[in-house]
Image 1 (cartoon, protein in one colour):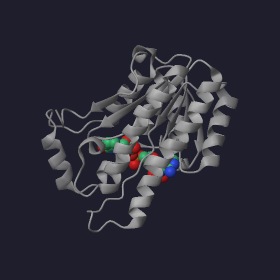
Image 2 (cartoon, helix red, strand yellow):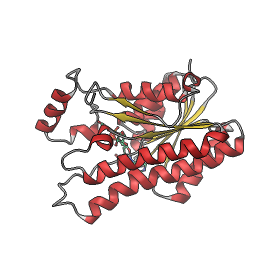
Image 3 (spheres, rainbow, N blue to C red):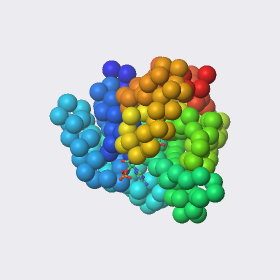
Image 4 (cartoon, rainbow, N blue to C red):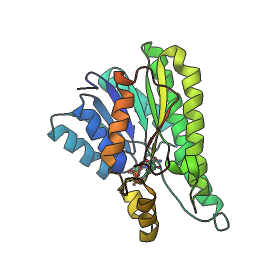
Length: 247
Ligand code: NAP
């Protein structure tokens, strides 16, 4: 088991990629703190992990709220004694073309996808520094952050911003043995993608060299690798997991 003895927080773990990541971390031996806005989703992820002989607790947290984020770190340490990894997976979309985008759409996406990652990263890094043995911070970017996408000004800006934070933290935190990496998923079969128009999804499939959408487990596998000691020499990287969408 590649994460035996480790303690990990996964945000947005009530469904989709976060749910698959929390389950995969538990399967690999980590004690997992399942975080989401949605209590029903949290309970279903935690129950599935516990039924599978894993170890998990759930906490309702809005990642845009500094007090709730701090309480999440404190509860994790109280329960499991330390924090080895955080997966900054919670993210939202609110699509419109540039011409039609509202300030509210802009602010909502920037708040969750950028401020949320900043707040969780800052609080996690403080805990990891204090422990003295380091840790890993993993951030959800997207192919859209790297290459842009029609109708996603706000989302593309947030996901490119995530890459900037990831690289900055790698430079600032390396001396404290904290690694910081991002994963840039292509199009993955999740509730987020189910909300997209069918023709957009078909076009996305056609653009991938492998001609398919990914599964949440494909992204979870990348997070497990980057959180594990197998990746001990990797920091500041952006790992594309996109079926060859952009080569
Ligand atoms: P998803 O199915 O929509 O799940 C995201 C989860 O995050 C939801 O349970 C959501 O709760 C939660 N969440 C939203 N705002 C939150 C907040 N403020 N605090 C805490 N939790 C919050 O998303 P996904 O498709 O699995 O994507 C996960 C991540 O990968 C996102 O960062 C996304 O941008 C990125 N990504 C996804 C794809 C893809 O193809 N799916 C591709 C590239 C990148 P509610 O449902 O209650 O809002």
